[in-house]
Length: 537
Image (tube, rainbow, N blue to C red; front, side):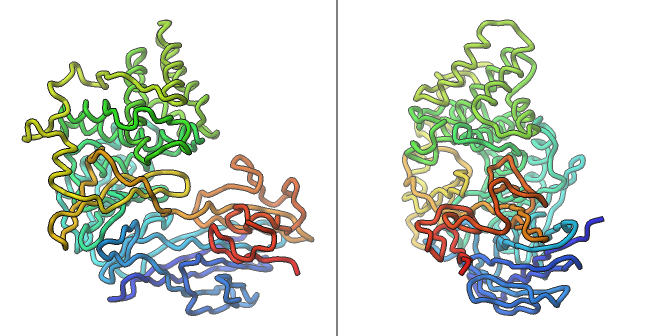
C-alpha cells in the first residue's frame, strides 16, 4: 500500500494590514521520500522556514531530516483602493483571495506516494475545496442543501447584499436541480463581495471547481444575473479547443437567462432582447485571436447557444443541456466536430426531418464564419414580445441608454484568465467622485468598452513523471485535478519512462515550471511565470 504525502496550506489575514495575507505550508513526509523542492509564486515572500533551506529564489529545499517541514510566507494581493481594477483583494478588514499556487517536486524510491493537498483558514474565513477561492474575515454563512449538493453563501460583515440570502440560495438550488448537465459538485461556495470600497474588475468570478464570488449589488431580476451565471460555470466540466472556447461563456449567459425566465425572475422582453442582440454579430466565434472585444462569447456566442437550443428542441425531446451533459461526461476534448456530433446525436434519433442536416451546417457557419442567426423565438417563448428593446418603466429608453445616463464613464475592464475565459461585469463611476456603482448583472449594458484585459489566473501547472537512476521524480499540480503532462493534454506519465525524456533532464528551451518557451536557452528567469530556472552547471 502506498504511503501518503500531504500538503496542508493554512491561510490567515494579517490584522489591519491591506494588500497582504499570511500562508503557512506544511508537508507530511513519507519514509520513501528522498528529496523535495517547492516553488513559491513570485508574489510571495518566505518569512520563516523549518525543515527547508531557502536559496533566495522563491524555491525551498527539504533538509531531509524533518518529517513535517513548514514554511510561512507573505502573499501580496491588491488592496482594493478605488480606481484599481481587482479580481482578488485584501482590504485589511477582509480579503477575497486565492490560495498561492505552490509547485512541489519530489524524488522517491519504491512505490509512488499518494499525494494529497488541502487548504484551510485560520480564524474567521471560508475556503472552497481546492483553495481557488478563499474569504478571510468576519462573515455570516447561509446554507441550503439541495439533494446531495450543499450550497454555502458567505456574506461578509462589510457586504450590503441587495437580495435576500434565502432568495439567492433558492435560485441557485432551483436552477441546480433543473440543469440537466450531469452530476453536480457536492459543495459550492459563493461569496457576496462587498462593492465598496473595492473597484472590482469583473462582476463575478468563478474559480477552481466549486467556488465563485459575486458583487453584493447583483440582483436576481436581471438577464444573465451573475449569481446564476457563475453557478452555471461550476457545472461545466468539459475541455474546449480554440474553436469551442466561446461555448463556456455563451452557455453560462444563455442558461442563466433562460432559467431566470422560466423561474419568473425576468420577463419576456429582456429574455428575447438578450438572445437576439446584434452586438459582435460579425465576429468569428471559432477564431478567438480575431475577436476585437472580449464580449464576443457573451453576445454572439449566447445568441448561437440559444439558437442551437431551440433547434434541438424543435426536432426532439432533448435540449442543449443534453449536449452539455454528454460533453461533461466525455473523456476527450470538446472540439467543433465533437459538438456537431453530439448535436446530431441529440436530434438525429428523434426525427428524419432533412432540416437536421441543415442545423449542423448552419451551426458550423455560425461558428467558423461571420454569419449569425436571424431573429428567432427562444425556448419557452410563444410569440415575439412587443418592443423588446424597451425595458422597465422607462418607455422609450433603451437598456444601453438608461445605463449610460445613470452610471457615466466606464472605469472597469474585462478580466481574462490564462485559458481565454472572460468574466462578466463592469464598474461605472457616477458624478460623485467617491461613488463607485456597478452594473454587473446586466448583459450588454453599454455600446462599447475598452477590450483590454488583465490576467487573473496564472499558467497551467503540470504533472511530469520521469525515471532516473533508481529514483522517480514527480511534480505536483498546484491545484487538485490539474493533470497535464509534457506530451500534451491526453498523456500523463506516473512512475514510468516518459517518451523522449532522459531521467530528470529538463528541456532548456522551456520553463521548468510553466513549460512555456523561453526567449533564449540561457534565460534564467521565465518572463511568463517568474520562475528561476535550474540549470546543470
